[in-house]
Length: 212
Image (cartoon, rainbow, N blue to C red; front, top):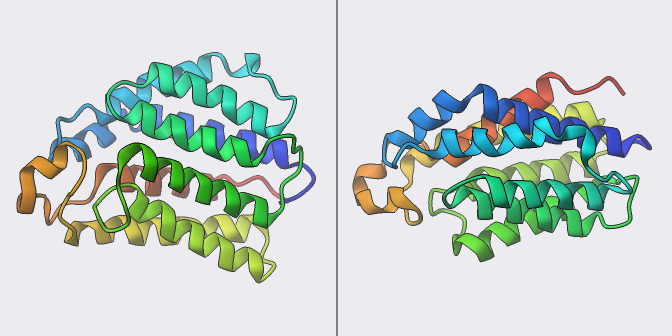
């Protein structure tokens, strides 16, 4: 990433928040196929607060900023989504503590930490039809693209493409975690709502990535 890393992180977080709010119904409909349908509502209500209080968050460094966002998400998003998404932001923020600039390696470390936090909080692993099935492949793509020296915009596009492919691939999986797991084999044939939400968010991030 460039020396304007904080601005890029702000862009990513704001895009996540706005996409969650704008796609409340779609995310809820995805969840309703095999879940209780509250995913879109819960996510939107929490990220509405993130947007509402946007100018108040401490931006002393990237880690501090992300940790402040994590507190809001954890406390304002209902159900299991709050702890899961809040933990992801908190763990990512921990890897960015004291940093105002990020390298590609830093970004990968932050995403790996987020995935590890989700694994610990949700007791889920790759292949169990959760958002990890999109997040981990996306992180792998980012690591590979950054290693080749690609631009942030190109990395964002590659990550979005991978995330969508991975989210679509969750159709073949049987849910092992969350409310969807109660449906057993009936969960096969539909995408995981969290994974697809991540894919839609990644697409919006890539689509509007600021010019380098």
